[in-house]
Length: 126
Picture: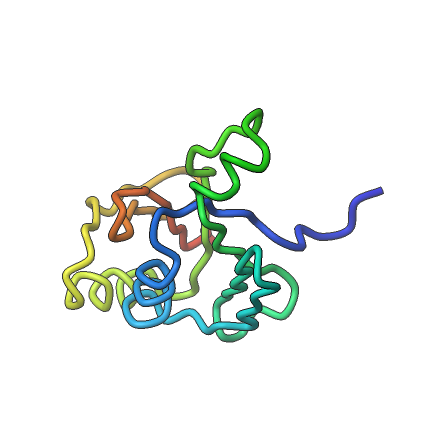
C-alpha cells in the first residue's frame, strides 16, 4: 500500500535556473543539492512540507541515460491556504499566471516557470 508521494521528478534544461525560479519566485527551499560527479540531484520543497519534494533533474543527461522515459513536464497541483496572496506574490515577481477560476473543489490558477512549464495551485473549498 502506498502511504505518501515522496518525490516528484521534474526534468529541466537548466538546473540552476530552475532552482532560482523555485526559490526566489515561488518561495521553495533547497532540501539538498548533491553531485556524485556524474549526476546532480537537487531536492526542493515548500518550506513547510516535510514529506514531498521535487527533484530537479538535468533533462539532457536523463534522456541519454534512459531514452525510454517520457521527460515531459508532470502535471503538478499544489495546494495553498491563501490563493489570493500567492497569486499576488507570483505576479509581483513577473511570473506568468493565469486567471483565477472557481471550481467545485476550490479556486485554482495556473502559473509557468522560466522554461514555460505550467503548474496549477488550488485553494480547496472548506
